[in-house]
Image (tube, rainbow over all chains, first blue to last red):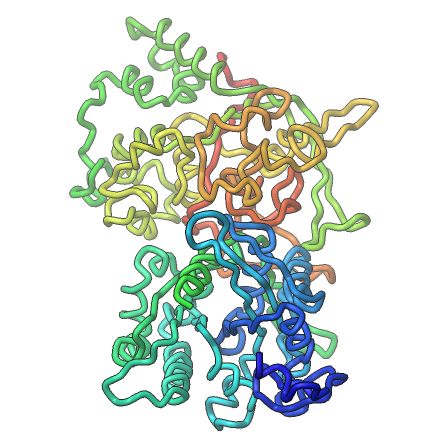
Length: 299
Length: 314
């Protein structure tokens, strides 16, 4: 608990993300902009939460994935039980559910860390021997911010701190793009994993031990990624596959989808510019819980 | 003449073993009941015509229910809110299958060599027909193996079939797919009476995950087509809500809230009813409209057949 309160009787609190000292009355950390409510809540809980980071390129679907994951957990899917700590933890799932029932995608996550949604949950799998509670902090990071940090490390101190402290990560990759032959998903994932590898500075022959779930999103567009996910990654994301094989000790591959059918509203906007706005016609959730279940069993 | 031209090495192709050589008996064996009762005249000279015709009628009586004439209102925009523009349709009486087509029923279609018989498929789909394969590359639904369904799922709805496969099966069996309006009429049971009752679900107005198989039911997959009898429509039609979405014969045509057309990567066909993985209960109702690419072969879409009421037994 030492990381929470700087010194006995010291009114300052240490940020759980970047370790900066903050006065107890600040809303966000003065250094990394993480919400101090996380620290207040963890002090109340009396234990340090573990961080699970959800990573991925812009538009890959991190917010939708995380929102549905948290909503499913809070509905006790697959015998999971999850309790939000703090009302702010519910914002993201509410935002995603409200948007998707209205057949719109949630707004893009802002690049500024003080505008990110942070979820702090207690979760456990009911029954059995593994029924221990996990205190989890899961932020909704902006893809553009991740890209900026990868390109110029230390641009976003909060990201560097988060990933350095993550007990596990989920790296979301756009399977639909990869299946169409686009190289961007492979290269972004390669950069992201390389960044994580460099964070831990392991010896040349030692592998990163942090468990990482590679999650192929929008997999309904390429059903073969559901049929044999490893084979799909080997074939369509070969650079990522090779790096994972070489440098990461605990990696697993998953496929998921949340949009049952995608259409586009087409036409011209008020300025006369042509556009095609994506519309999620209905929601069909596949493979959302599996990566999470795998990850927490390894942290 | 075209039979056998298409992929002669396919399973089911030439795989008519066990199917009666006598055409009328073969139709009965393959459960092409609709063909027998609507086009049976040509077999009137057959020695067993009366018996077989009556058996086909009995099968239809057992498997289909009458949906009375009615009317439906369907929103024409993607945002279905009170006050949004709607279009009304009148529907004639028709017979609707009480259950979706099962794997076992569809197996007969595959075993008959239907995927090799170009004549029964729309010409526009011929170039795509070779892609209608299962997990092992054999002709058939996407999740089958070796041209066969999983025997433990014989009574589950067939899935992994596109709208063309559904429509072709229905026509092959002597039936057709319901239009979107007919499907909605069957699920909402909106009969013209002084009350103009409209059901949000076939059983009433409240979502009940015990009456259907949606995400909230927690099954995580399809269930037999005869399950959830407590969710039946007044005429005994089962699972209009949940288990699998159902292909209809209608194109899915809507606009956004500003009247701009909503389109897909390819033609969208209307699907109805929600499936086992439908997360929002508001998307598994008698009136929720959505569409799916006509060539999509997902894990959660099946279909049921319709016979025009006037054609049964004529």
